[in-house]
Length: 636
Image 1 (tube, rainbow, N blue to C red):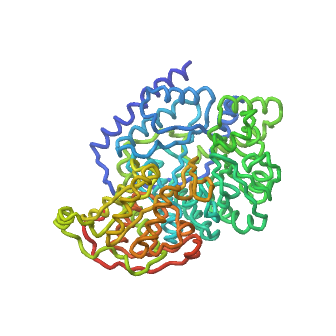
Image 2: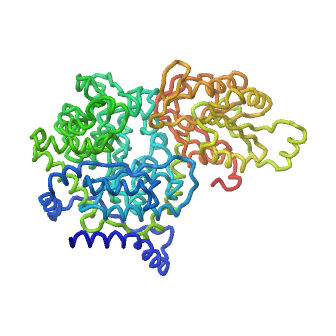
Image 3: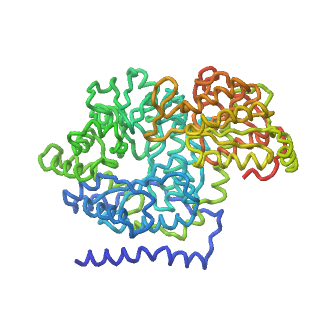
């Protein structure tokens, strides 16, 4: 009874913590560019984990194994969704939560960062044991447009930049900002080697196609993050890079032989383990060379998780499943949804992530332990790992965070500048016929635009944004950056729904323009499928409608057209006639700024291609392109 009263009091006080802390920080303002000392992730042995384990009931132990989804829309602590989450934490004794970002397009509001901290502080008081809070922060703390955090490009951009110090800085900044917001565990880095250009879900999320470089960048990120207090995760074991199916919608099949796995897929995971990675995430992929049983995926395969990862590679840390609500895995257990949790745990996983049917999975685990199918010793070993991870983060001593530390750590100007600097270094020139770059060597007078309009003459520069949705954010920053430098330019947006209706107008404008820039936004996105010209369904290619438009533009104006790959670099596979081609490997805002600077000759284009492109180049190749003009206006 005393515990319940104390807990209720703490819950009520949690909502006041931000207020008191902000009052204190107002009296003692923190410099925006000053950072607090980092706290490393390090194993502690003060007995808390062992003592806590002994005090837990069976129900509490099983609950520690589960990670449930936390949507950041739950900012209102009185919302039904928030109450449901709190109820699940208490009812099932949940051990960890994973933040899930809201859709893009919501207005940027850095005040939301305080809402997030308040919510997480409150959640930490809902249970007897501190929660591990995880995030899928593959480009820094996301969503950056809500939290005002540092923006980084996709991982493949780091492969193009080719600087290990950048990857380590990426880990350092992400860790500091995450911990300031109350997030302890990043479900990153991606250790997959993207050896299949048609991969619909990995793509630019991977550092590249060279196993050695991928492993080095993975290890560098891990070092930077762990040195600054954040748990890290190498994913998706034993490798998701050579697949052509999205595991969110189906079961990918890896047909590579053991030699390919040994020389291509496994080396980055081995380097991650050597660097001290805290967790390895198993993938919902079927690897026939490791387990021929077609009823199993790697996540549920003892041969893959225990036999290969634990026994052969010697990994001793936390093994965490990929999200278990993905359609591919759910479909395998349609008749018995709870069984997937038991099979995954018996295979060797410690943390069961986002189960499809929490109650069924929880009850199935309880029954498996009570019946002896899962031994008590095996259960205790996994729970102890989880508790030790919490102790290594200091959660046994303090489970809430100081809101007053946010201004000095989140969105720090030095960190933001680092994200932009890294993006600048990643821009890669693949093809150049010498007729397009740079776009201009002077800033046109606004009077020219008026003159063009009065004379009904097309301005000299036409920028075409090919995206999934003209109402979304893709292309907005690029448009502003181009118009800063060339106010007389014309910018048009085209998505698959309007492509047919707008094609003639766009083609006529391209005929009249002196130079044409086509920015193509194709990025990996979970569970997104599209029909492409060859009849395949994946999200690694342009949809038919916009692909047809791009083909027609290139057929009529290829010599004066520059194509910008704002995501996948593999466009030359489908459009071999491209003569001027720049890859950014990301649709991040920093990438849009960087490519605008590169287009206008303000910065050199230093990147190296981290993957092999058909009809273009192999890994490591580049075209040197120095800066040619003085910076015009503010690029940011």
